[in-house]
Length: 143
Image (cartoon, rainbow, N blue to C red; front, side):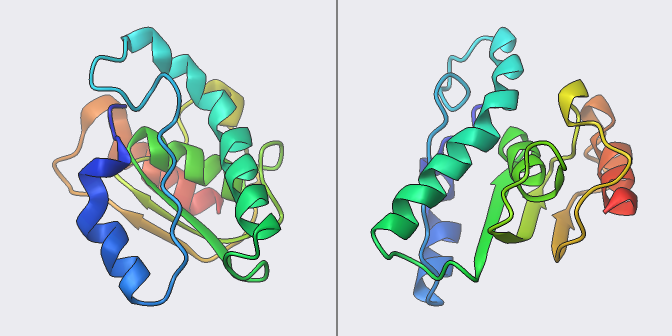
């Protein structure tokens, strides 16, 4: 939580400089620095938010509809994993996922069979909050 896109302007700028069309939505309720812990439940709505953003970009002919990838950090990584990999929440246009310090935690996202896509999971071995590393390894194994 609290991963507002403004925190990642350098990384997003690098992707843009490499030729990628970059959209960095600030999710309602979970991107603010003062978001309540109860806002974690909002993560189930974020895959639909990502699909909405992809729809708007492609309607404006921004990006290549055959090469859509998503990425996120922490709770945003969980949203990226859900919209990319989860059978119930995935968008078939998503072709790759980058998840930094995140995994599939929310009970609605639990799945035995995730979509097989190019996947990059980035974690530090000391990132043990809420079992993130273990959950990321489980997500990777499921994908």
